[in-house]
Amino acid sequence: MRLAYLCNVYPAVSHSFVRREIEGVEAAGHEVHRFSIRPPQQGLKDEADLREASATEAILGHGMARLCVAALSLSLSRPGKALGALATALRLSGPGLGRRARHLVYWLEAGWLVRRMEQLGVSHVHAHFGTNPAAVAAIARAWGGPTFSFTAHGPDEFDAPVTLSLASKIKAASFVAAISSYGKSQLMRWSDPAEWDKIKIVRCGVDAEYLNSKPRPIPANSTEFVCIARLSAHKGLPLLLDACAQLRANGERFSLMIIGDGELRETLRAQIDRQKLNECVALAGAASSAEIRNALARARAFVLPSFAEGLPVVLMEALAMARPVITTAIAGIPELVDGECGWLIPAGSTDSLVAAMMEALRATPQDLKGKGAVGRERVRAMHDARRNAGGIIEAIAELHAAKDSLVLDDVKAAANPVDAVAHDSDDFGELAQEDKPRRKRRVARRQPAA
Image 1 (cartoon, rainbow, N blue to C red):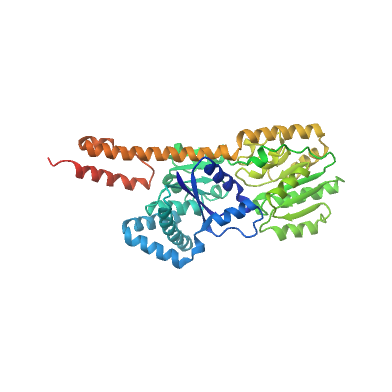
Image 2: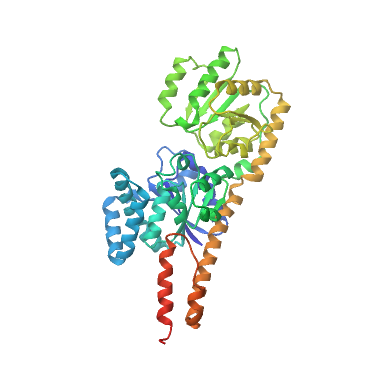
């Protein structure tokens, strides 16, 4: 199969799971073309991400003039589809001039993308995140582009399902992937029960570097915690610094390394200075995969006190390296983490976080090793990136098989026109409904006059 992947910004430091999924699809023998709405993230350090950046086409990188020319050319060749795509864009936008203007830009992006995918012979596009990538893919489908699907990660899709027109995107898609059972339940919550069968669980994963290499033992004297996160509000990092202040006040000997970057960097730096935590807390900034593995190898435990999540891949990476984790009982996290592989605490509770970190500091080497071993085996069983990519491949293959069946029905209809209309009832979702009347009109034209 010749496929396309579409993201808002790709590659990006926090989107290694997309790269791993693409690698899994390609390893199965399929061709994948990468598209990003915006240019790749600046400051990439990982060699794999740098390779992906050179292989990815950024839609907005072509400039608005070229997007307008592509949309105009496409509109002249298929005016009915152009109007349908415009109607889809406005329907997905909802009320408000700002949102409508944004979706008009998505209409232009989708027009360019359709022309490019037709040049490449792409038969299906899979978008990651149910935000603007899913919107552009849906509008491209209305332009007459290939079928599409998308993966919803959370928490953004679940924070604003109405604003993002999540139900309409689910209805238009050929299938939707959720990364956890929790994620699936939220997609079901915001969609018509008639659409539930198209929602599948396809878990994110880690690659062979984590799964196949033998994990190093936790250093006997390590008192270091590691947190890997985007420095954003939903990760709960100010709470983690408050917990560190309490631990230090209690006389505990420990250190914390926070790896990542984001909009709260200066806020967190000011809090570290204000609470005089410079001797025990370090903001390390972004890091490569190798640097992350080295940091986890030195750690006693991994900590992530998030307020909102999907199911963080960093938890999988820490557990794959046999490091116990301290994290919050939210979203899809309890599907991976429990007391056997770490400490699961209530979100927003500084006292619970302090207690868990103290337990980790006091745990025996045998306890830590046992928790790490359970976590590693759990990740190996549930979160192998290449194996899980098979879920996407299978869903797309089923879609292609159904489309081939439609073609066969048309061939049979040509040979036996009287029976054709009765068998012409397949449905690929709201946007595919447009194809059914045309098929029936073709069959009707074939029928002999009475």
